[in-house]
Amino acid sequence: MKRSAFDYFKGRKLVIATQHKKEKVIAPLLLADLGLETWAPEYYNTDVLGTFSGEVERNGNVVEVLRQKCEQALDEFDFDLGVANEGSFGPHPAVYFAHADEEWVMLKDKKNGWEFIEKMISLSTNFNAAFCNDWNEVEQFAHTTEFPSHALIARIDPNDFQQMQKGIQDWDELRRCCNLILEEHGKVYLETDMRAMFNPTRMLVIEEVTKKLIERIKSLCPRCELPGFGITQAIPGLPCDLCSYPTQSTLKYIKSCNHCGCETEENFPHQKLNEDPMYCDHCNP
Image (tube, rainbow, N blue to C red; front, side, top):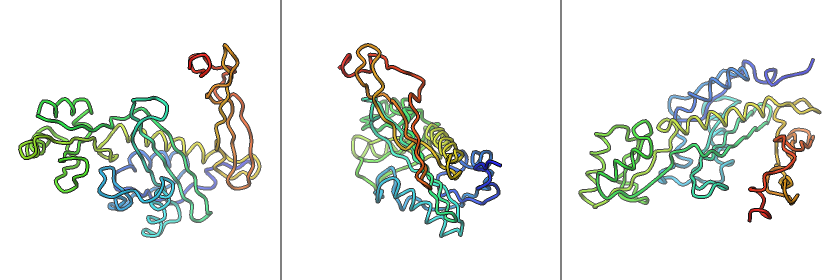
């Protein structure tokens, strides 16, 4: 009988390495799709590995930090299965002048020596920051960033970590914090609080990348039947419909297995044989 990912994970216990309530979206998916019994510690300090507000710099690349989050939680709480998420925010790599949310998630299986990683880049984010010179500008920034459903951070400037208020979620508190800084310094630096529990939009993106991770795990290798068979490379070159020049759009995916090295190709993964000339560097330079 052909195996499924359920056979490897059903009934096992998993720790969610988070202090920002990400279990709200991660736990139900892992239970429903992989049969995992999840647990999130009441307090687990992931801020020691880096903070969005800059007090603690992230030490290492995103995969290294994900691995640290998982391994520390596995050791601290004596689990052999853990999951962690890491996000970053900035300019979108392809859509210029737009902000993007890049989310990564890792499931680490210490018992079997497996790591499964998935990522996604989303334009769905309220990520923003600005100096405000008066209350009117504060109000305008707050409305732009979906306050108060999405929290804000107020401080003197981007490099000030002393007089900083995080997790502001109501207008009275925002006015109080901002007026104190405005009266003393003449301007206040506001930024979106990107911690998941204070940012519903980001929480939805974490939910989506978790779904992608689960789909990767559920995909078994055609050779060894172990989980995690998925896309490891996207090859550009889909020809332009007008000039046949190769574009940057995906021509094929390379799918591979981390366990046995099995590799396959999937041509025209988006069911398109040609690309619109508007995406061609030759027709639309």
